[in-house]
Structures are given as structure tokens and as C-alpha cells.
Amino acid sequence: MDRRTTKFLRGTAAALVFATAAFHLWWGLPRSIIYAQAMSGLLGRGLPPDPRPFLFVAFAAVLLAGPYLITRGIIGLRNAYIAGTLLMIASIAGWVFWHATGHGAFLVEGFSAPSSSGGGHHGGSTALLILDHFNTEPTESAIKTLEALAAAIFVTLLWKDPAIIPGERRESVESNAASEP
Image (cartoon, rainbow, N blue to C red; front, side, top):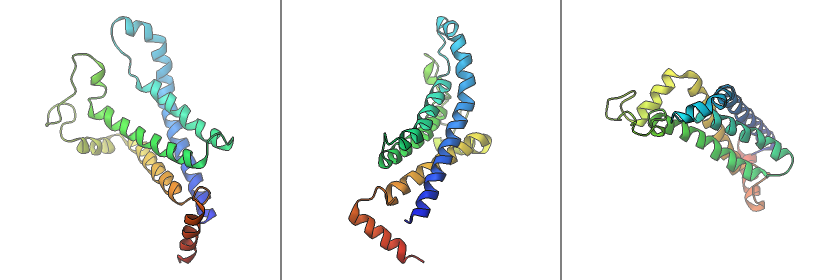
């Protein structure tokens, strides 16, 4: 992969990560403040608050820390690509888990998630549930698409970025890139 393509992919990955972090802050920060103010009353009645706002803010902070840590040389590109891939996949997996378990029904004792055998809120398989959310929740589907694209770009960079490829493999990758039309 040539340096121009590498720079383009790094910039695209950074923009996708920034968009993901911005969404998670936009959704999570106001709710975190409200929940923090009401926390003692909710816990006193045995009601756990929705954990997502706090997790969203923490997730966004980790995402935004990545470019800072890279530019300061605290973490290398290889580790950043691995972390970026894992964080994007974890976000997608967390979203699937949240919806597949009845939107947090597992948090409330004695409350069960809707069955996946045709009854309940969604019904059907997890795959159909996710497709349903892609159709009915355009913001969520856009963010999950951005996260999937970011993960794919991180994997591509991990595999093809000349800055992190060992010497003999770098020569092979560069000669293959030079011979492509």
C-alpha cells in the first residue's frame, strides 16, 4: 500500500472514530448528568439506572484518547489499530447484546427478556432483530455502519500499513502494490 493510500485510510479511520465518539457523547452525556443527579433516589427504591449513558461517555473518552496517545508516542500504530478494531467490534457486539436481551431486561431481577420464538417486543432471530433495528432506527444503523467501516479500515491498516509491516513482508507488499495497475 502506498503512503498516500495509508494516509487517506488513517484519516478516514480517525474521522469515523470521531463521529462514533461524538454520537456516544451526544447521547450519553446529558443522560449521565440526569441519572447522576437522581442516582440516590433510584438506588434507594431498588431500581438500577440504565447503564448505557455512563458506558457511552466512558467509551467516547477512550475513543478520543486514542489519537492523543498516538500523537504523543504513548502507543504505537499496531496497538492503536488493534485497539480500534476491538473497540469498534465491542460497540457493535454491545449494541446487539443490549437489543437481544430485551433492552436491559437482565438488569431487573425477576424480569425476563422477550422470547425469541415469535412473541415479545421483537420476536424472531437475533439477525432479524438487528435488521429490524437497521430499518427502524436510522441513527443507530448509521453509527453501527460507521463502526463496522472503521473496524474494516483498522484491519486493513494493520495488515497493509508500511509503517508497521516487518521488513521482508513490507518489500513484498510494496512490490505487489507497484505492480498493480
